[in-house]
Image 1: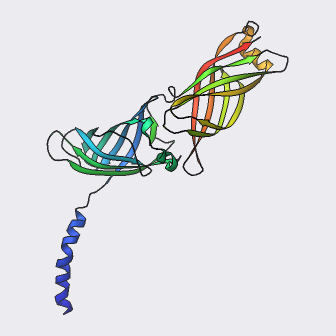
Image 2 (image 1 turned 30 degrees about the vertical axis):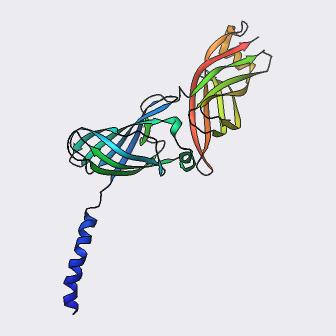
Image 3 (image 1 turned 90 degrees about the vertical axis):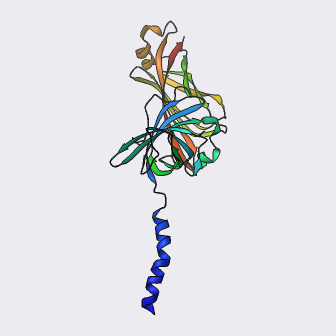
Length: 279
């Protein structure tokens, strides 16, 4: 009896095994390269490795790209560049992201050290049926897996200059002004803003601000108190101090944003501007 049942069970389970073998095989998300960041849009290359693609070197992707289980507000179809190789298919998705449409849920789920990225959809060439594709990857922030090929932050942050008022024999007080643009549709909370004002290779002043809020969809001016030693000012400005001189300077800062659950995302800034002494 047992011998008779074994072939019957094998025959009954065989179709399920075949269907399991036909399940969609996922590829990997390898790198995210940001190519442009403006006040309205982020443009990036999302590089993936996929086991299957449609025919052709240039294809269209339709579907969903998610970070931290949160779908991104992309407008498919996206252009996909496909290069076939012996180990698989290298597929680069050209992503345009409208910053004002990023959901607030993403900020709540975002991890400052890694991006959990998933891709689900289909690729289609000029002819033939679309091919289902999927890819997953965890990209480590601060490594080559998440990087920029162009200077970032110039459109979102600025240094309006620093001004020291008066000069004494010891210490001189003043104020610097930074502008931080929040392109999102919801406010951002800054835990810490640590900053320093430089002239050439000399650090003139440094300080900290805490508990700031960057209002949504607008430029936020942040006043930064500064103080410097009179001797440092004289060395940096030379004879220009007596005439209320102005020299080129930089604001070097670190902005710590609150993300996720009690987590911090640190954004470095190095902004050009001017430094002035008012007699």
